[in-house]
Image 1 (cartoon, helix red, strand yellow):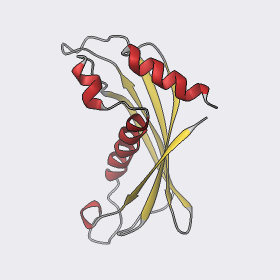
Image 2 (cartoon, rainbow, N blue to C red):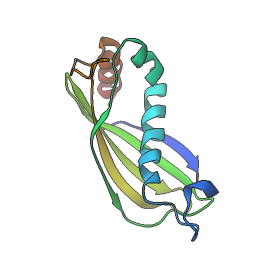
Image 3 (cartoon, rainbow, N blue to C red):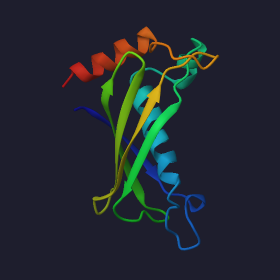
Length: 137
């Protein structure tokens, strides 16, 4: 599957007192990867929400392999595993760039809902751009 790469430098605020990235911040890294993945497709969450459709997380997981530390340059690899009419799944691998080491892997599943929270189909533009990206493989 095709993936999108985002780099991110760990800041002091990401870390616990031992200069190790706090475990919950990996979910922020997932969001950075997902946001840049969409931006790469000329989509933004603002553009999607302006259509009245939102994409909340319905499921998530993270498996930690090694610790990221203050000032590490991370590589966030984001892949769409599947896209269905009303949901989408992203998989993530987070690496330390130098030396390249897998630090964490995980996923998020998102539904599509309207302003009232009712499940709706993904916006057509999202479906088209995601399917176009997937078909480039």
